[in-house]
Image (cartoon, rainbow, N blue to C red; front, side, top):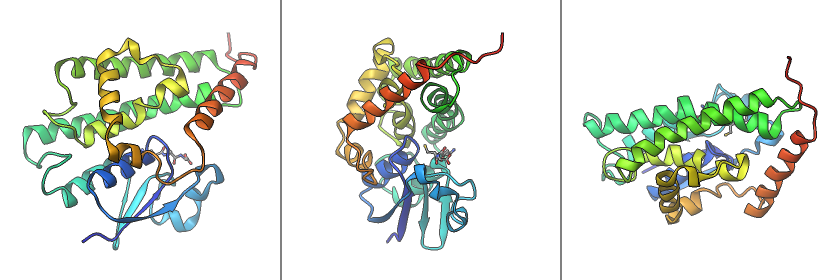
Length: 235
Ligand SMILES: N[C@@H](CCC(=O)N[C@@H](CS)C(=O)NCC(=O)O)C(=O)O
């Protein structure tokens, strides 16, 4: 029996938690955390996630913060049937953890910086844009090499390792104009994951009130705003 509350917003880190909760068919309450309002920095929430970011969950008196930890916690506690994870102690478990760490330590921070410079900064830095988009693409090429050999990142089934990486990769075409045709095995894997009911549902939890079209339009406008600025890199 679970007593889970999810504190989240439909961002690439947020949807990792909601997709996993949906895949496991768990019941949970959701507290919408519109990060645009900075609610994630309020004192009450810092007691749940001292890092002041989403997602976080509580399960009874247990708090869990950091999206990678949430995936591992949910798998450990609620995936006895190993629907989306491998059992601790197996070689596949270690592989699964490695790909989760690859995402939380690599794709997340690098693609996050690419998003910052390409969409949200109040200066235009062509250096920052190129550096982080190039690094994001390099990391995608690491996924490509793995997915050319195997349909899923860890072992022979869809797991929380795929959920972690998918949640970021799926955003790259719309936000950064990264063409996944450059990474055909990644594209095929994204298309396959996107078909899953739990992924479609989890991607929109909580409901931000914005349609996919509005989100894409928002990215386009944000890029245009940066493009209209003068490059501020030092020479
Ligand atoms: N390492 C953290 C990163 C969490 C994170 O950066 N979340 C973003 C949304 S994707 C956030 O809360 N941003 C708001 C802020 O930085 O205040 C994780 O994997 O959970």
